[in-house]
Length: 395
Image (cartoon, rainbow, N blue to C red):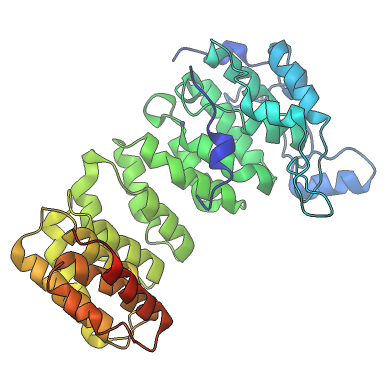
């Protein structure tokens, strides 16, 4: 039985048969653009914040949301109870009191915890998809937290198209990231829509939507050459935080593992400390990148000699390698020497402290004498780490 993971995923940092026949006829068109929507609202008319409904011929055409005739009555009953819970523009349904305490609503809690999709999760997911297309942000928010992480919804071109279409229309930052995760769960090999998904990840005004897509698209489609190439291209964008998020998801694909290793080596020269630190950490783990470890050692040796190192994941990468049995003795000794240089040099205190751990792991016996010399270091960080390492039981 498929269970929703979106509610949990949205709180962090930090997913078949022809289903097109279940799509209801679209509602009358709403405002055709954000500007038009604003004009309509100013004139006293209704404003949904959503662009115009696609034409009926578009496979991403919307249902009637909450009013869709094929909605599951059990799910609707639970939804209507949850909609009666307190909601604020700032906190959504996660309302806090003036004292800062969470105001629990039983119906909202039940919506999040109960298995509402039932035995036929694919059928229940169609109701959730209908609700995701509703005009009311509260309905859409509740719906996105109940989307399953896999199933026919993501394999069929028609339902996947509706999901992408909603992502293209979405205006709520609150809904954006979990909706992005769901878009990334689409199986592009069977459902298609990769060009539209790529465009959303590149250009959506909702950053959370972009982050969500990058978080799940390649892990879901780990044999897709086009999806992988898209990630490689995205690692060259100007946004450093987004490059970091892309790199976080660039792993676990056996199809492209050696290309990923090569990309990690390239990213050692990335201008972002977070990106190059993560790349170094990945190389320190070894397989499938053990053949690139000497390149990491050469890079770290150069950085340690220059001083001013701020990326604590550089010594952590050395520690990770020394904990494993794939490195040879020459590499282990080099890793120890670099770690000593990082600990002694004019580097960030956290780098120096982390380097002490690497020294101890790379050489548990002789490393103790080296670490002993830092028990009275001027840096509290370094001094505390030295004492902690020395007090730890010997392995």
